Image 1: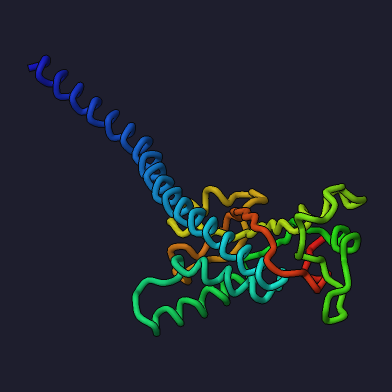
Image 2: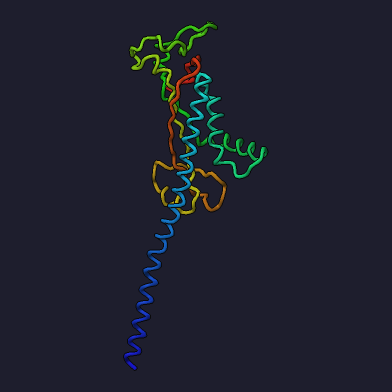
Length: 222
């Protein structure tokens, strides 16, 4: 009889130990699963951002690095993140949402050419205005000037696009947020579940050759 009581007590202790171990491990496993889901979403956002960076650079190449044209292209490139249905009305609504969100959480930086290069190589064009020339580049001098580049390299448009990617998976944003300077307040979707989620800035670069002269020095960021 005593042996049976001892066996029963042993089983109770083992069950209690297993329950404690489950309570310790389960939250960690659950959080790791959520992290994998968030990582997959971030990978999708980064892939979309890479495409949007190329779209932005192409728009800048044919518009003299016009910031308005580049921002339109940026929003169009990011459209897959905002469009959840097909149809013209849905696409227009998604584009409007993308433009509004990217005004706050998207940035375009022209890395090259610089204003110093524009000042060094500017020429008066046929219309009488000064611009960074884009014609007869093969016949121009390849010597680098005081700006550190030659006129051919100054016609390579390099843009950096930054997007504050939302951490929409519950709990992940809370844990990763902490006191990290890399996360920004704000949410992608207005939902009670992610009301405390932050945003993680991600970047993408694209380089294309200019297809038009740059008239406005102010279009360059530095």
